[in-house]
Length: 97
Image (cartoon, rainbow, N blue to C red; front, side):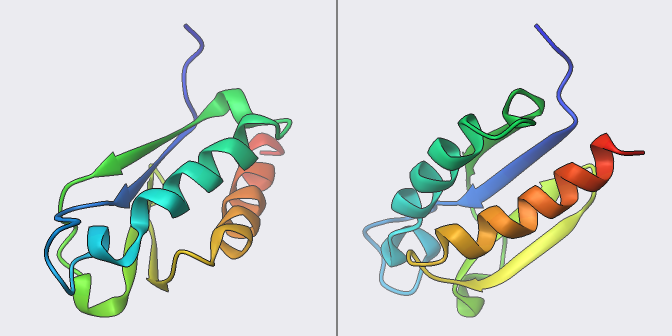
């Protein structure tokens, strides 16, 4: 297996609990992003996974990308393109270095 350059975690914790990322349809956001990234030129260099609580439920859906330690807050299930653009920018800069 090829070594990954980045790993993005999208909080999908507690879909049954109001106010938690999972309740805000975070799983749909994660699935959309995973599909978009799969077809990107760098798609084999990143893994998109669900995570447990990242401790920022009050700030919308939360996500974090490592090793960059880049946090994404205030996301909604409609932010797939916005998150994809941020990930793409980061991945393109890391593949050019």
